[in-house]
Length: 235
Image 1 (cartoon, rainbow, N blue to C red):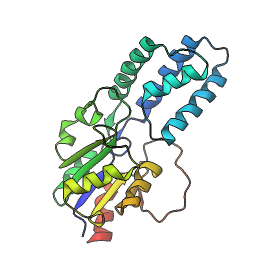
Image 2: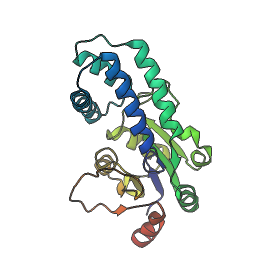
Image 3: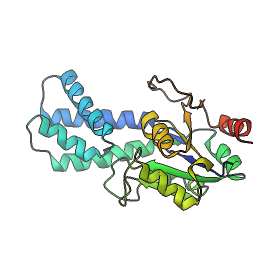
């Protein structure tokens, strides 16, 4: 019996994709200009390779990444520029974060039958407690448990720890929970690893290259489909 629905945040409940793209572009341009490099395309190739390496290690700290970019070019990191760039980065992301149109209604429907929880990775912000969920109290108040993995000693997803901590706080077994997320490696594989039933949300309004994997994990394209899917499979 399903007792709780656990959600990811970004690109699951809210759309921040354009905000992240714009913030990355601004940061890339600022660092490229400061490094006074000759080839923009070569710089982007190097930058994106380094960023992929950090993400593979579940290190989402922009400051760590940008320091590594400077060191890659044998330059001492520009601490003042990096600090200012991070503040501007998150201002851009926050100002371009919007709940999906169906999010609030879908959650209000589900909360009448299930406990709701949230597990979201910190994106490497220096200031603790600054996750974007706080921008939307009308959503945040619907969750019994909110875990920002990557803070307060809790490792980020896909590590097992944040999933197990969430289950402990809810007081339920893994098989009594469904996890809804957009990221195959971090969300879907992470949830499966601890025995939670995953649902992969490939939201129709998010423009991205989804990984091509063969899987029996159910896929939905908006949150309106979630209640119907649960009703068809778990009641």
